Length: 421
Ligand SMILES: Cc1ncc(COP(=O)(O)O)c(C=O)c1O
Image 1 (tube, rainbow, N blue to C red):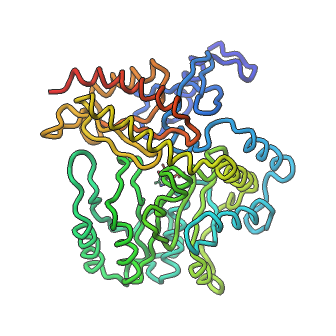
Image 2: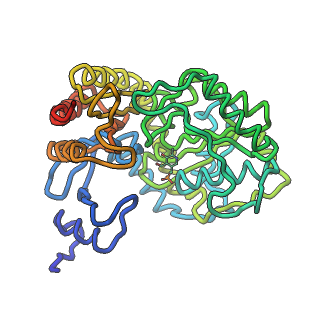
Image 3: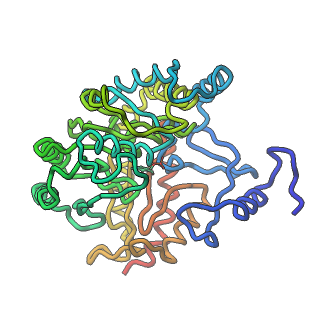
């Protein structure tokens, strides 16, 4: 194929073609992937090489919280790259020192000590390793790879029209599993305080507090996975802040650097870190505390603070909830809407009662494909999953830009309305 060699000179078609030919796409049957070629991005928009503009209504992967192309972050990364691009994890360096101290300030309660990773999955894995080593409930090797020895509990905040179980029923269900397994065999309970990709499921008031109480009573560590919900996504620094709960560990990534560089972290209460004063923590990563990642995170946190982005997200979250309610009132194809801050979801249905999603769980449909095509053709990028339309824009979004995005979603839903019974 005659592909030009100068960097930045490939066409969108060339980029897509080579990407599909030589790279494997995640979560996809390779024959079905149809990626957008991205060339550059600024604010809430990104652009393909031919100049087509897309409004990013999902902050890429619910992660570019401060928006694209913020020079305060890119310059901090460049400066750090020139000074010290890498030091191994046994060293101490200024970005690591400052980021630990800064995170202690912005995380809940006495979460004061941080272990840095490359992203969210590793943050969760290491939180579980820490919990197993500390509680002496390892079941197997202290640092074995993969996820083993996990018992799952039902998610009682079901999606769609189903009313969530009352809080006491959910909590009783959790405690029954704990008693059946034996609390002494359980190192930790890990949960997303607001479930993200699986549908923006906001727990009823009392649930998170109840989990905290059950974990404390049984000597089980509570780990909040705030990889997606942290850093202002829900209109507070952390989702757990909505319920005034301090977990024993909190995992983060995505918004930590707004994805300008890969970085994750496990935050832990000082009492947990104290448990490793004389005991070895069996866990490590070549890129733990990467100087450039830490520098990117420090600059990103400064942007949240300087621009008041957490408060802005809360205010824009209310505007977004208004758009959701308006769509629900006008479109029979909207079966339910949910949001907290700028973390939102629209359930598209064939029928509200009985509740019939426009695509099956784990599947798609012609109607959802038509919605996807409409959004893309009209310059709106967001995450569509099964019958859901995610609405998770960067926290910098303005009222006008929200209106611009929801006008496009409005048009797409008019197509879906035609398939309502
Ligand atoms: C709640 C949650 N936890 C963990 C992860 C994994 O993070 P990463 O992809 O950075 O490894 C994700 C990714 O979407 C997530 O949403």
